[in-house]
Amino acid sequence: MIRIVLIDDHAVVRTGYRRLLSAEADFEVVGEAASADEANALVQRTQPDLALVDLNLKGSSGLEAIRGMLARKPGLRVLVLSMYDGAGHVRQALKSGAHGYLTKFSEPDDVIDALRRVAAGRRAFSADVADLLADQALDGATPLHDLTPREFEVLRMLAHGSTAADIAGAMHLSTKTIFNYLSLIRQKLDADSDFKLLHLAAHHGLVDMRNPLGA
Image (tube, rainbow, N blue to C red; front, side, top):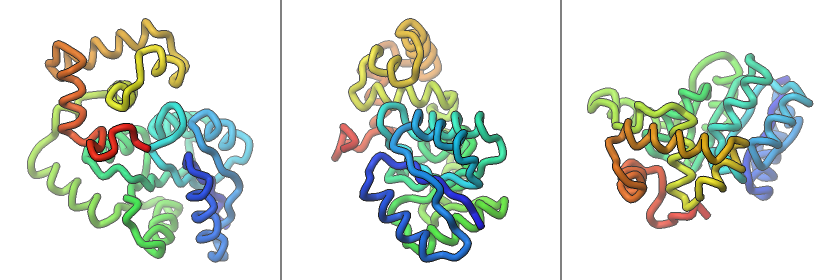
């Protein structure tokens, strides 16, 4: 029996996943969470084998959730299932410790297969993500690949309209620390203003300009 936790900020989505997985004899959903903090507590309490994680959570993102869950249970296997299909999100999820990445365009059978692959110690990617990673390997890294997962998260939240104080609260850090991160990010990306940071974030897919607030 593979014990799974569902990490997604939409209750209706979690309900859909639970119904899908309940039809499989080898899966047991042992808990749900809508934020990184809830995910960390849930993993510590339930000690699951595998986490199915969306990157768009309440407060800080699934990247923070992945790192926090793995800190509490290093052997946890993690599969990301996200609306974000940009290379930056995929690579940062892998840097954070994810073992597979599917987009929400994936068919239910593909999700089931990917969960089993990840639970068995293998990697799993949807076809569009596999193609994206192959293209990136051929074309070379983008400037965002030099960012650490935490720097990427700060930039992502800034791009979605969060202030330094908002980011500090969501990540449980001081505002001064967030300003330090922003300074490092500007240096790495050769950007002398927040406007240039936002332009780079949009250009590299951190924010969907058709839905800039991530609603």
